[in-house]
Image (cartoon, rainbow, N blue to C red):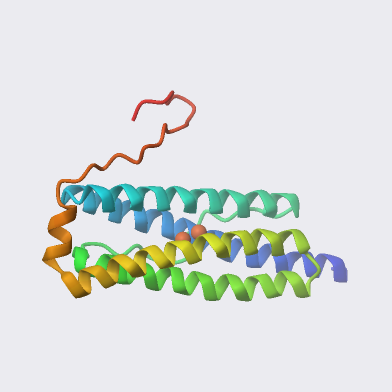
Amino acid sequence: MSKKEERRNKCIDALNKARAMELQAIHQYMSHHYKLDDLDYGDLAAKMKLIAIDEMRHAEAFAERIKELGGEPTTDLAGPVAKGQPVEEIFTFDAEEEDKALDAYNQFLLICRENGDSISVKIFEDIIDDEQEHYNYFDAVSGHIERMGDAYLSRIAGTSSSTGLAPQGFVITGKE
Ligand code: FE
Ligand code: FE
């Protein structure tokens, strides 16, 4: 294998590790979205759904770059999806997941930089900004629940679960 191929493979590997983390996050946040919907915490459910959609975009961005480099985008999840968590745990857990992603992506970015792939560096930079926003949101909600508990949750109960999005898909034409 040439030096160039070796460098390229290291970048593909870093991108695929990140993609597997995104695939896990998609399933984790969808699961949390359904749970919050069941509990009728509409606003929390809607934002969780939007964050899951952000993660889908990330998984696609990594896959597109992997394909450009001649690799095969993974379909494996980085780890198992946690189930059955009460609302008091969901946001602390998800904030930690984002924190782990921030740390990992910063390391992957360095691997791409060391191996001369500036396009992947840019992709990681953009996605790291998004993960920081996800972290800030999860951490804020986690703090509200910790400090105010039921007083906070009772404000959220019964709120709308609309995302305000006109979802786009092959069949979906704008009704939610
Ligand atoms: Fe992500
Ligand atoms: Fe995220």
